[in-house]
Image: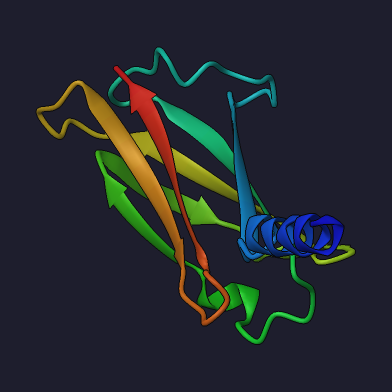
Length: 126
């Protein structure tokens, strides 16, 4: 029974760590102050900071192959990915909120790979 529990614990730990990427978002105003995504205005510009971290190491997919899908957001300018070390990358994207006739705008980040990849959504409420 003890061996079974140890094997089950190892299996569960492996399943939990199988998610390949961690993606986080921070929204900033033009002065670099963090802004709540719960209240943005059409026509306003913001800086969206995307933080990407591989959780499995030695990812075979280059960070530049990360895809972005936009709805109600226009990219005004996007910096290159900055390598922060330890498989962490930061990208700053200047965005403008457009009128998409919806209550929300969104940016979806997609990374496709054989290790689970990543799909992360950033929703902005107008």
